[in-house]
Image 1 (cartoon, chains in turn blue, green):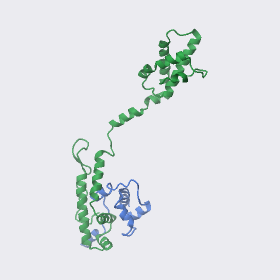
Image 2 (cartoon, each protein chain N blue to C red):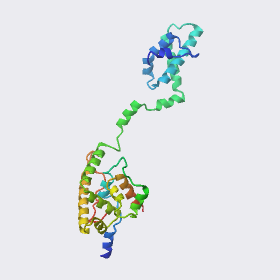
Image 3 (cartoon, each protein chain N blue to C red):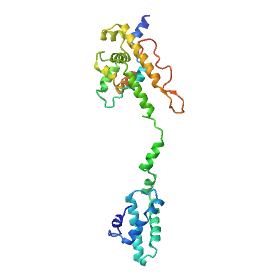
Amino acid sequence: MTKRRASRERPTPRSGDDIDHVFESANPNPQRVGCLSAEVLASLAERALPIGHPAYEHLAYCSICYRKFRRLQQRS
Amino acid sequence: MQRDHLTTLLGETGQPLDPRIARALIALMPRFRRNFPGLVDDAVVTDLLEKAGQRLEAREHRSGPLVRLHGYAWVTLRSVALSELRRGALRVAQRTVESRSGLSRLATLPARFGRPEDVERATLLRELLATLSPEERLICVWKKAGFSSREIAKRQGRSPASIDTLFSRAKAKLRRAVSVSTFTPSAPGGEPSQSRPPGRGDDQAQGVP
């Protein structure tokens, strides 16, 4: 039970679901407005930034950064 | 090839060709175009005309005015053109797809990106994603980043259960969006298809990023 709760609390990144499918393509952002640097993306992928960091909000509106973020997560 | 070539065709000495010869050569242009459709570069054609004209001038210089200038001019021009075509430089020109024919060939190639159905699908996804509230979007991203419902709830000033509910609702919306957008009736082969294998993305319950 404890183990199950722990896995719910700290879910591991998984790719290829509906969220990824939509977020990776629905926000093209061709002008790259407000795009994140490689360092910030790496920090996001490592969960090194606090939950209140504005970079998370950008991921919700930029498919390019979201894709990079997910690739970095899967690599690490 | 226009009439102004009469004045621009030059002989070996750099002087304009004999107008009679130049006129005969210009008159052959339609026939030349028909016989050598691959030679479209005006500079190359002018060079060929000048070479042919120079040969004709040399011939007339040696043995007097040619009686059947038109016929002789054609034989000379064709000979010069065939010689040029066998040279390496023009082999490249022959193998090069010209812009007009290139476009027609491109038009027959099937597109792999940016097809109408891709654009439609992207637009549909964008519209469906817009149905998520800013908070639902952010929760999806936080979940993907690995934050727990409890951490998100603390940040949002909500209960973990309400975060789970919001996340489930967002996932349900997105699942509907994906099921609609991945239906591609015009897929190759003419059969309706799914752009990704079924079953993936069927997240169980809650909290699965």
